[in-house]
Amino acid sequence: MTIGLGKYGPWALIVGASDGVGAAFAEALASGGLNVVLVARRQALLDEVAAGIAARHGVQTRTVAVDLVSPDASDRLLAAVEGLAIGFLLYCAGADPDFKPFLANNISAAEAMVQRNCVVPMQLCHALAPHMVDRGAGAIVILGSGAGFVGGPNMVAYGASKAFDMVFAEALWSELRHTGVDVIGLILGKTDTPALRRLEFERGQIVSTAETPAGAVPVEQVVAAALSNLTSGPTVYVGEQVAGMAQLLASQGRNESAAFMAQAITAAMGK
Image (cartoon, rainbow, N blue to C red):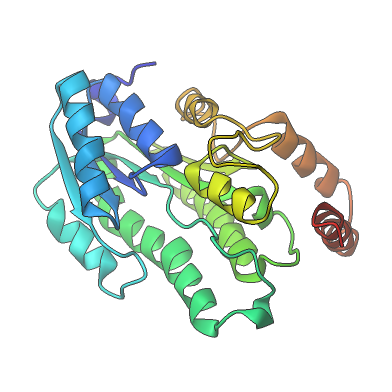
């Protein structure tokens, strides 16, 4: 799996790169010759990922430790990449660690979700896309979720933020599709990440974090789907489960879809 420097290089900015999908993307892009800027909260883990990538692929790496919930997160990221020709932006931060009813959580948790999943990617795209347009080449990949198809319990703010991501990617694609900048909203379902393993272990669904959650798509499949469909935007579904859900919900009205989602999640939780 390689990405040509002529179209997308020389630098990729990967937001949410410390593990899981983001780290897998960083590995794949570096294997194609792109230098990578890795962004996440944990500096030590970022440095470890960056060192491994540099050793394996001989590319340049930079790390930026930042909490995306911070109001100045975008400013700090943009300052860190000033002077770099960012030709590939991947935004994959923003998983929901709680999966709780809206009223059972502090409002600050929902506000943080909107900041991290909606505000920051919008700001980064607005700042970085003009350079890509001027070059006539670039790629923007924004990770969405099947949770954004229709509202459901225990993911009120998360689902809404992922609906925003999906529509934002579609709209941005519609404006940039004749500029040479490829835009896709990558819609994921259940994906085998450390975060999912921790969540399912805490809920008693798996016996240890070394176990693969049932039905979870490997991160390598996510990366392959994105990189093989960069010019097939605006929306790319990863895995048969998500594609099937999209087709099913599209055949129903919004009210029917919301009722179906509520029943499905309730049943999955054993309630």
